[in-house]
Length: 447
Image (cartoon, rainbow, N blue to C red; front, side, top):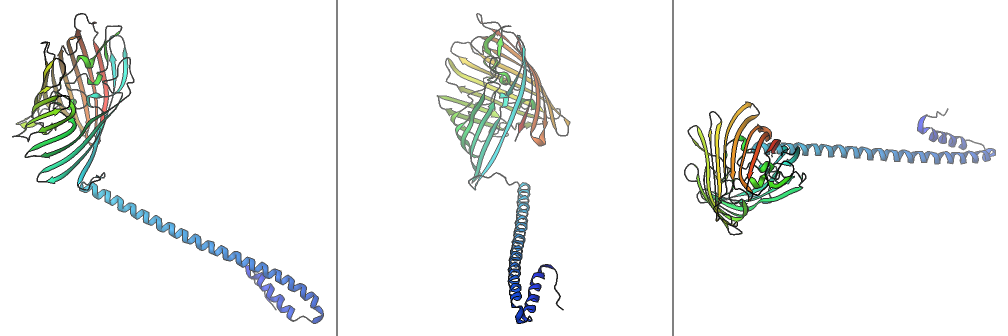
């Protein structure tokens, strides 16, 4: 008895059984045997084809298994790499290592900047309108600074600071609400500093007199309220009640803050005593200036503590190379009573002119800094400024304001608001002007 197993081996077993039957057949059944042989060959061919198909399936299965193994190994390697990177980042943060590095291994690169956006609601005597601006009080910018230690207390540094200020508030006006994009190379300089010999800076940057009319210890000074009262609305024009006069707030109110930022060479002396420093600069266009600062510390307004008070001050003289101007004087000072947070800030500036119509600006502010919330301090300020002969058509101008700012220190955020009033008396023959009222709401984010 011949047993034929089931499954894929059945055709092969049938073929073997048929071969045995053929060998036992008599001679007179040869023809029938040949037919069976042909049938057997066909079955054998089918068996071979099935075996080949089975072999291909096995090879494909092995290949898929290898691919799956390789994929699993690759995923494991990627996960391990991610864990190593995460560990390195965490270790770097813990040790203070920068995530952004310089192309030079001995140079430390830092990137910082800010965004300062605001909306102004302005009433010019003719109507009220909203202006969406970048706040020129402290415009949006990005800063790249590289420093390297040369040894013996000497630091070599480079600095690039770019203003990126769309719809700058000093350009926006009633007849030009979309003033476009403002780009400026604020600083492009190289400097060397040694605390025993001072600092030498070369390139575009602050002159010695820059900011000397703006030294201020109050919180509200940073984003919105300081002696440059017109910066937040400098492009807006006074009206005569029905028409624009062409006299902008930037024309009528100016704090006479030195020579600004120029292509220059600047020398800052070492800090003498608790905070006295002398600076001098020479710039393109025959511009020169000299400044004495108290608590400035190479431009950082750290102040000098005297008992319960923090003090800060500056005085500068400048040759601006302007027509009919002999020289410019600018000064400011600020004192903060640290236990109460109360501060007083004063600023004064003037141009000595050949025609004896010396324009000047006087500014005063009382401020209070306190802490209502755990996430950051709160500041308030009230100020008053008077300008005289600041522009060709200007006689006397006054501005008063009230402001508040709230800091969120962990995120580098400041939220601020301000109400400000401007009034201007013009020279004889010039158009009269209506008062201008502005309410500002904005925020500054530092990074």
